[in-house]
Length: 576
Image (cartoon, rainbow, N blue to C red; front, side, top):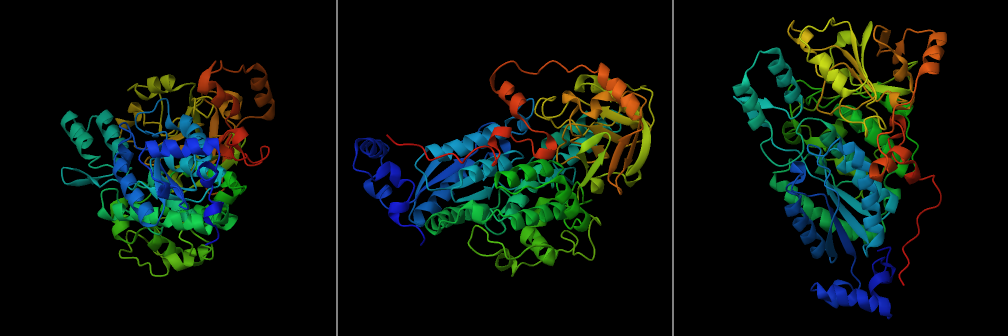
């Protein structure tokens, strides 16, 4: 052990023979504690994102009990502390508006309470980065317990993938090829258990990234939420975190630059969500690693997609991925593309953790010699429309749009966009480029998932199912299609996207990573001179704080005052 009982952080609250500590001890006894609950034992925070409006986390109330059991068996004292639930489905205007608020809540919850380490329970899209960002900034030993994916969806004997099949069947519903009975059948069959989306959407992507960073126990990110092994994993996390506290295995010893490159490589090989770019940058920077879009694109160029999972893959879902060997098997297939010497939360190296991993289905987890897609899942584009970058998911789009030129149809808001896409006779062809702006971090507000712009009815009725779409918004990781996202700087603050007009010719070249509008510098200058900023979205409250301090997509959309280079580290709270 590196620490002694006297070194425990919680001892600052409970050990001194003074008035304030007597108050702490007496109030602990009020809750039924005895002296042997605080004397010489690590106090472990079980940070829980369970709520009645978080279907992805609906089992975490139960899992917290298994974590506590593990903590007790290892000689620690567990305390469950609830934080924001991150309900992806019900939070409006978007859960992304609240990721940083959640990260701040986690950081301050850990800082202000008498705890020595933490197990973080989450998994739905924004919960993983928020939990990790907050815990990284606090710096206590922690383990992330992924919520796990739900079971496969099913309707009429067909496996359904959450999100991915929603968009597919919605297009068919709007095209008139399926009726209400089929639509209702999909609605009732697509989410059959608790847990996160079972496609390789943002939730599964972020849980895999957490394991890629070394922040979970081996294999934790792949276990389906309803599987009994998930309960055993919760127990194991509780036992291990007590050991981590005694070993003083803090996150700065785990989340290094090498671990970050591993996490990016894992993300690309899984066919990750486009949202991964924003969250990877934000998490890495909280750890002091200056991850950039250039590094992400560099790794993407050389890392093929090995997980044949929807939406990048054509058939399988996360349940199949688990049965095939899960993330340890995929990392074993990646071989020397990973740094196997990095330390993980179990105290072993990544190489030791995956030494015995096996791939049980090479169609689900492809070997490097037969990838599901020849490059990584994401590509970073730059040009006069996106001087600070934009992203696209080439593996999940019609390849013919990877090199494309066409006239823009511009919508200034989502309301305008709906008018266009719901008009059966709107004048357009598949060569047009549908543009949505003012949907970025400040413009959304919160950068909603409006970037997976539904196909217009005017094209659906003629059998078209993809076209080039462009926005400063995000899209669900379960989405697919030729959608350019995260255009930075965003239109709302005067980025080039604010200046284009319907009819302008937009040109994309994914292989060469470019995105441009065919306009002269003189025309750009003329339009900029007559552009007027939109009215602010908020005049008070959290929304005002968000608008004042949110950074752009290429910086990870963190708050500027939460960066690791902003001022000095926050001191431990005084106890007086």
